[in-house]
Length: 304
Image (cartoon, rainbow, N blue to C red; front, side, top):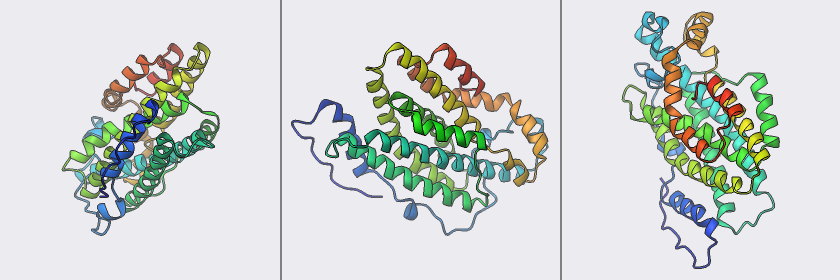
């Protein structure tokens, strides 16, 4: 863990840079190096889950009741790896949107420097997730081709509040589930460490995304709000529905077709997603981004 003395704020610092300066100081005081903080050397212990079982897409189904303890643990390890792979995919989108947003802006501003700090964090997180998935003995789970192309389009056209609110949606959902996983002693220790690192560092990213969303919306008219609210909702739907690849079931030794059917009908998992997004939905409502058209996609993704 890197620790340094925070820089004092300057007398003439612009007001809008205040949050960025505090986030930079927080990063200086509390940041992690996954290469040294995570135990990469100890072999995988298959007596542990990869995620809290209550977060499994099959938890509470008939299939779950029929599965052996070993099968349940194997499934949660594959699901955790799939979530990590989806995280890498979206973090790559995030980095490109942030870089485009700060392109040609004043590099001496705290906001510019915080944006680069966030990108550096995301690079480390992506490597950490990749190594974690490999240690969980999972293949490279990739989103469906349609999702990949939609992500390519979104990262190209999204700007302002559309970019930052979409970042917030993805991070909020991950944050709630990972807070459960990092405290759960049933989860394999190295995954708990990964989740702890991500939760600590992403809390700063979410603070920045909220602030930027509010700031950009202050200059947005009614039509722009309507368009961006739908763009954010569609991005949220694609992200959330891509988190668990259907191939996790076969790789855990299960009947893929049956598992997919039961997972789609699993009301417990849907309720977990809704509960994880309650704070997020309150924020979107408060800034006027939870419009009627947007609600359709959030409901389809079981986020509300």
